[in-house]
Length: 184
Length: 431
Image (cartoon, rainbow over all chains, first blue to last red; front, side):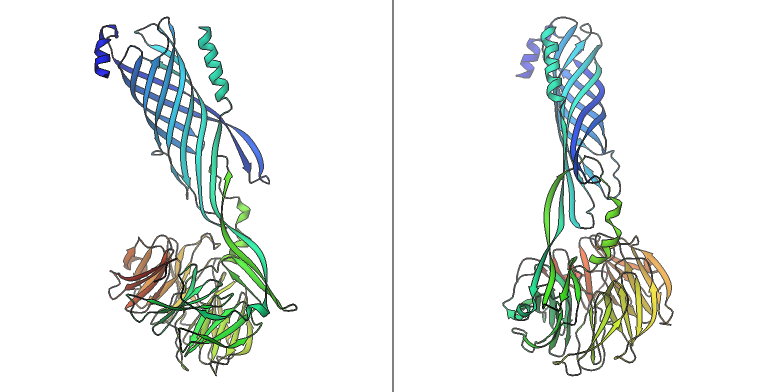
């Protein structure tokens, strides 16, 4: 089906079918927790993590590009490497500013995370859907501004404290990802 | 362009309140205070049908029988005449029991404040024959403490249960708050530790036939006396007539006493601060010879010849910063001297069948050393069995008894380099 669709649209495709979309930006979020250093009172903090990622794919349709995304996310206590299947879909046809949809889903690994003693950090599932603006002439390098929701899971095994037998933490990073990038 | 921008702003607004959700799940020890009446407790010692291991404590071997303490509840009696298929014989309910010693056909057990003597000539139905009342004033089980209130005839006890709790944390490392350590840790050093014993280093003595206890035991038999250690005292019972134990004397030892290991004419008492050596030439009157001090840690001791093998470990239940095996020269018991310290990972119980030393490393398994060369023990590691979660070990020469987190194992140890599993009693399942 995909092949048929692709060949049917072949004459409308640009010469290059390979697409690279590289972005960097921040993951903005908050966290609410009970502070054990302060009588377990609830406390709310801001969280901001650096993120870079690169999407490499093939244009299979005039609007649609599918491929793979790899990246690095520097969370406060975890360095995660998401590896995901991704797609980019142009929502508007004309003009030098296009609105596009973006979606990546996959798994993040803690390959390069160096655990503190007694901790064992593992990655987890990741989804990252959102929208973006592509600014630039067709066929040339375009600048992109992406705004998406990112949900990243992670798991940490910890050394039990003196009165404990087991201790582990399930993390879900819920973040707003704001990214600047380029696409060609 | 305007609808696009509007969409952008809407998504931004929806995501702007994104919260990280980090939940830490912990299994935590909880204490609840309960009061038991002594009058009621003293009616509860009785033989019952065999039951499964639930929370095994110390172990004692006498002849073909194994006695496994069920922490605070009683004693499993196991027929081990065939190590390949041990059989549960009976379960004796003894409230507040933690330690065991056997002389001839008499089993001595603590029941909170009392010392109970049971006739085990028929292991299927042991009977209480005597009781020394109100001799132990306080104690610890699994971190929960109890103390005797003599004026009203009651035990004020803490029940310990493990509860799972989930709390929101800040998605960061959350290292230990520093003040949590220290003070409280030493109190819970005496956990559900199994006692190890060695054939060659077993506390044997003249006068009746004794069973074997080991590096974590608080009870020891020597000649006509039963020695028991409390948190700060050494208590002597005269058992000239085994069925009639008599409260004999109390010796003040020190603080944080954990284990007692009699060897030849000496008593080696392990405390959370060091090792005390007592001269026991006159069994009725042990005299302190030396106090070998080291860091604060859990420290079972076994002795063979002129060398004491002491392990120190850190961990959740033990304070201290060392994980090591110390060899101590005790040829002059008044002045014990360190021979050498060897770094270990997380040493628990140990047992010696000279020249083979079995050392439990907790989750890191069981290590077997040839200790013939006392300066190069680490160079003579015979084997390291990594797939065992070993708490404590007893070497009976040909047979090796081992307790892991999930049950009780027996190995054929005729070749220490290649242990062969004979049988396993899993926790929670009766044979």
